[in-house]
Length: 270
Ligand SMILES: Nc1ncnc2c1ncn2[C@@H]1O[C@H](COP(=O)(O)OP(=O)(O)OP(=O)(O)O)[C@@H](O)[C@H]1O
Image (cartoon, rainbow, N blue to C red; front, side, top):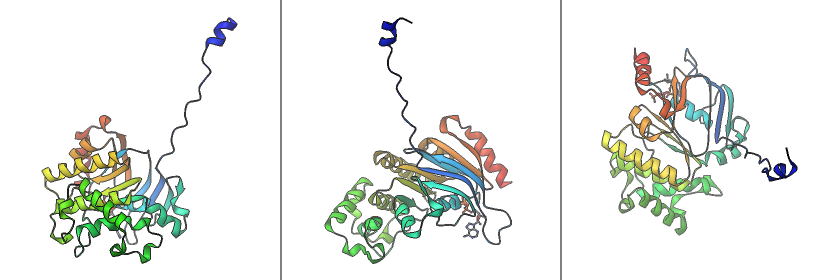
């Protein structure tokens, strides 16, 4: 090759290193005392920042246990869990608390404090930011946090309910307050355990549309457990399916045969 031609060739550019996953689970197993079979068996996957993952599986297939094990709310029996680059299983409790504060957890039953106002419930989302969480009390929250909580309520369209007691809300409103509380927390990753389970089909779709839009606009990563294949198809980029505690499918949503997944449920039920 002529020297001139060699000089014209661009310098080889090093491809950027792929970003480290937000969550990596390897060989995770868990059995509960008294259970005949392990609930989770050698579960493994990685989740990149910004992904929206639907975790599917029949009742009792281990979805909730898996989400809880990832934060050591339930202690795994075996396996490795890396969350934001930290080894979850070896962290001392203080660092584990700090790590958990960066993960929002939305439960099927919303877990609001019914006797408190909607705004107070949302302010609670900031508890992980307090210097002394054990001494923290929402009534002491500064104007800064109150304003932020109000803005989070605006984002879920419920600012006019700020002063209402949380136990005076409908199921759909309660779930939106739970989302506002999660926004308040400013997590990197959100786990949602059947977030639309108690809602009618229309309210469920509205809630999932709002939820996934906010997750995206706030730059969060999402893992949601669901029984609703339509929600998985519409709101996830990727599907992970569990059957009897094992990962039986892990694919981008476009590559999933949803009718086949239906069969997976029927098989378990039978
Ligand atoms: N704290 C516990 N103690 C003993 N067994 C438990 C406990 N929690 C869950 N299990 C059992 O572990 C299995 C998996 O439960 P898990 O809640 O993880 O499944 P799931 O896929 O989330 O189910 P669902 O879709 O019904 O919420 C079930 O057989 C359940 O009875």
